[in-house]
Length: 280
Ligand code: PAF
Image 1 (cartoon, helix red, strand yellow):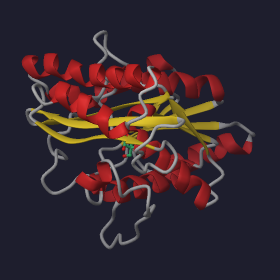
Image 2 (cartoon, helix red, strand yellow):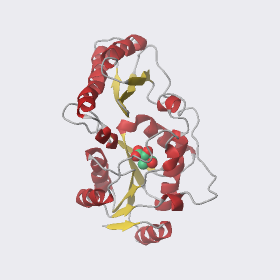
Image 3 (cartoon, helix red, strand yellow):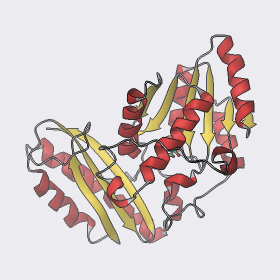
């Protein structure tokens, strides 16, 4: 497995593979890998001849008061995990090569970025779609792999790939969870032991929603109220508890088909998101 930092070098290397007709799978990450990322790398390995994992803590998707500086980084550990999961390359660019002086082009997906995290993290998705477009242009993958945990991100990236005729298959894989149901996230490493215990309630609140929907409860605002009752005693702050259409991401009032139940809460200083897809 090779670690490549330079954009021209990774382009040249992958160009050689493509000339020989080999398929390329890309797993975009910000590093500090966990089992969720590894499941994406293993799937990319099954599907493709060449697997590239990008590791780049992307400054443009963090707000001014967010955790860009604190975001956990450990390339040595990540490289070991990538190799074991079957990656061929880590693309590990520097911020100044991704965003050289004078960079002034951004990619925005409208509409889908307004609700859920878009309401609380202005500019976040603009940063995500810009960096993912750059990674797609650099790597030119046949397929790219994302986790369902970032449900809104996946919907936005699928829309972007389709709207801009990128010709890249977007694969979204299930959320990988800890034993108590907490969705794996690099940010879980910020949690205190008490916060970590309290964080298990997030998934329990999603299970409650699923149970109510399966029991034919169609009243989305009522289900949200029940979920909030569970979350209020454990969360430091709730950004949102929402039941939305999984394609448009618009709030649903009466549940008649498949819905995305999505939550963003703070445990201490740590913002956690999670979701489930479920149907009436
Ligand atoms: O999901 C992430 O880790 C990031 O948002 C991504 C897709 C790698 C873009 O920086």
